[in-house]
Image (cartoon, rainbow, N blue to C red; front, side, top):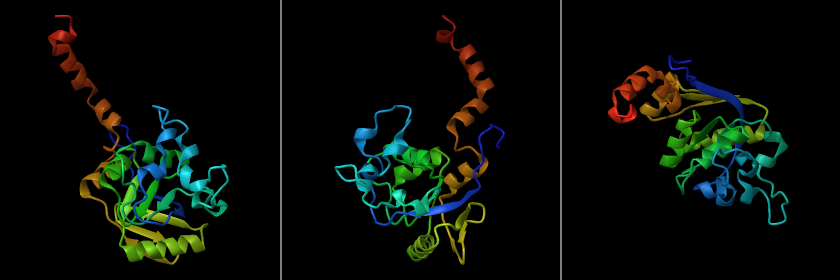
Length: 204
């Protein structure tokens, strides 16, 4: 824990789930018609809804419905994942489904920022390394994948690869300052002192 009480995120270890394809946008991750809760509650039920089931509600065979990937917490993707809108609901839906980290070729900028704001690890790797990891996880979904943010490396059974994350975002996760509320509470005394000094906050 940081001095503000926010959890430091030094990486993540867990089982993987593979969603292949470039330009998976936020409409695919969470269709807009399901964004009815301002508290994000229940979004996990509808993550990838339109690509998981047909109009009759029957499964299409999406990896999120594959029992081999049940309990996975690391999502492995290709290029430009999370493009489209700026909606925070997309990483919220993934996190509530169980995803705590992503490894991909690249992420849309706002989607990446929203992940960091939620404490979700989102690292990139070279396309050839992502391809190897995807193959390995699909061949053996029971294995653990580990992301080490301090060493910037991902490891899995029989393989490893360097990963990347912008320095500022990496620092926020490592020192716990990704948690905006925690950072705000850390300055509680200064905030109260400022409020006390404001005439309009004291009824003039």
